Picture 1 (cartoon, rainbow, N blue to C red):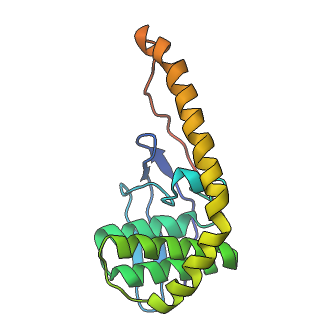
Picture 2: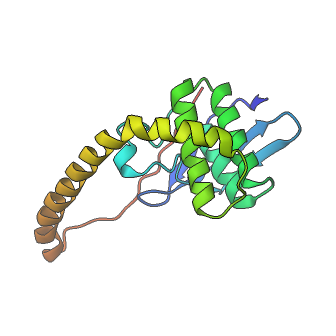
Picture 3: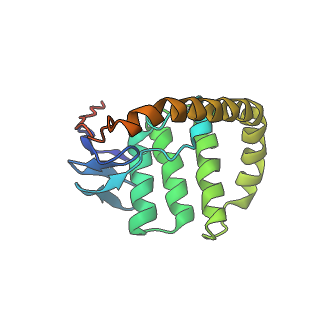
Length: 177
């Protein structure tokens, strides 16, 4: 079980979305999943207050793209998509604490969206530990993000009034080993 070798080549669509320019292929134990060129992803869907700990991309980028695809195309259940995400991160060499925290986050999102309720026991153990680790720093980071947003707003208003804002998105090629 592994990803087929090749680069992850994307084009930025907007501030949070990227489009695959070439397919990403994952060969699982029983199935092969091909994320097609043209698929849109946000890489890892990390809330802004947590990117200090887990950035939106890293050695888990391929696993995040695969997870986005599995949750969108739905060739497997949401619980299976979350499990494949965790296994793919392990295969990519993501550390145990990061892998389990990211898995707990996607399981929490699955539960909140009303998806199947599988894997409760592991989630009940991992989620509280992850929350204890990140809650206090996340609250502090969120407070400063709000302050920074306010400063950005104040500095953006004069430029907006003068019509000096731009929204062009550059093309970026991301290469991974």
